[in-house]
Image (cartoon, rainbow, N blue to C red):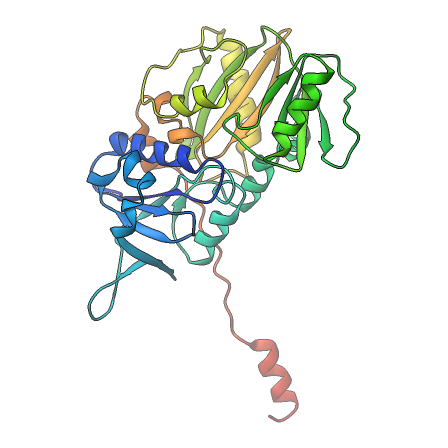
Length: 344
């Protein structure tokens, strides 16, 4: 049986969401799971399962835990006379937002040769930047809604009619997101978004648009998909609602859609996932407008890994296909051949 370590926390605006996700996932995965917390100083701590409570981290009590070091092959803690490796087979990257989803953690785990579930570098870069996501989707023949990108040094205007959605280019969980119904609200929305990023994404706001969430992963035997969820919401999910939503482990509002739309959505998911997101459990958020399917966002580390969308989440994390790093032999052939030619 596979044993897992959940890596959570991290230095991002979504630090607290990561903690909530880890606490939720503890209930789902159950026994034989290791919890490794990355705090605001990028220090790693081994947290006992019984201490996985939100207040344990907000009160800094976690600092009494064993501090870990990252070395080739895994995490280690100091003992009286030596260092002991923390035993687990597969790490789950559950750090949301910056570092967890921008490729930093992926690079770190790859560099130290740790097997993990989570996006690799290329998938992280593409999904973390919302403009890159849209350009990538178009390259895979998946439609996206109209959008504009605005930097904080640009003139404060957009070409869309109001209302519009304004959101930071590189942030999730609806943090910094606003709906602007006029020029004054648009100016304020920019102020809010620029608090989190120097670049924003602007999109027209379509009232009554249908939204669907589909999670999935490539396994050793092919793709495994979740239920398709139609989120219950009013016009848009704000940060507080999404924050609370991440803590759920059940209660999916299963979408009532045609079999043709389900198949088309799953095929679109495969196009987006294939050859770039292997090793990750991804949630794709789709829109349907005027009977046409659009991709909104690709979430490579969704809240609680979207466990509540699957019939059997433990089967997903046990069967997921994990790419292996290519071993590059270092043999110094070139240097040795030069030295031999020189008689050295």
